[in-house]
Each structure stands twice: as C-alpha cells, then as structure tokens.
Length: 214
Image (cartoon, rainbow, N blue to C red; front, side):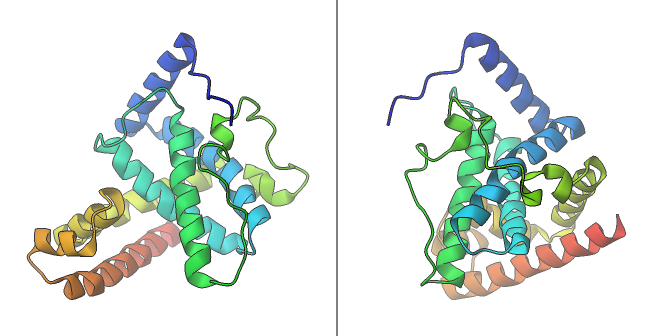
C-alpha cells in the first residue's frame, strides 16, 4: 500500500474548522458530514455483503452515534486525516461485526482498514456507481430527513437515564469491556451485559419514537 499523503496546509485548516463546527453541534456541519459518510458507506456495505438496506442504515446510525459522542467529548483528535475517514472506519468495524454476528457463514470482502477507506484515497470522487438508486443520498435522506434524524438521536440520548448513558459511552465510545463498565457502575459483568442490552433497546425505542414524530 502506498503511503497516505498528508493533507496540505489549506485542507488541514479547513478540516480543523469542520471538526470544531461538529464539536459545537453546528447543524449544517453535521448534516453535510452525515450525508458525506452515508454516500460512501451505504453502497460500500451493500456491494460487499448480503446485508439489507435497512440493516445497513441501522449500522450506519449506530456508528454515527458512536462517532458523534467521540467527536463532541474530545476523544477524537485530528491527526492529519479527514474526520470522514474516522467515521467510515467506525462504520466499517460495525458492519463487519454485524455480518459476523447475524450471518456467520456469509462472506464479505475485507481489506486493511486504511487501504480500503475511500476517504483516504486520492481518488475519493470515484465512489460506487451512482447509477444505482441507493448510491444517491437523495434516495436515502433529504436535508429535512437528516435534520430529523440528528434531532431524534440527540433527544433519545438526552432522555436516557444517567446509568444507561454511562454504560453506553463506556462500552461503545470508550470501548471498555463489560467487566470494566460493570466496575464503573458497581455491578457484576453479567448484570452489565443485561443492562447494556436493555439500555441499547431503550435508546433505539426512543430514537424511533422521536423519529416518527418529526
């Protein structure tokens, strides 16, 4: 794999401004970011496995929740690569885990994370064929839909109990083990596993409820 060329200074400054806008929850910045990553990831996942469009969308949503938490709390630190590449990596990890969990015998194409990251490719514009409807972001989300999604995600997160927020951030954002998260909450690993399932389900239910209201 050839070395990844660092971003030129002008692009670095632009990327730093973008990251700062995301951290302060700028709606336009999040909408553009959301669409840019989805435009690449959704067709990427569909082309490389038998995952359904609905499941690809769910994987994308969960990945963007994790990504947004890490950006906003400062765990993501700009290191010269586009923040979209960081988001794509999270999406890809979650896609691989989903395929392995749901269909252990299903095959999927796998390469090294950096080598197969379109956002690190000098020819990023050469995305999967836009002749397929699902490769066009307008087929998936218009501006109003993206805005409604972001608002529903934030409202769902805000309504979670402190315990659920702590557990979800510990496990999904900090990537701690269930045993470590259990210690933080003062419960056993088995109890943490059950609570993680319930909290995740609660988060999904709240998101879907608010999404339907928008």
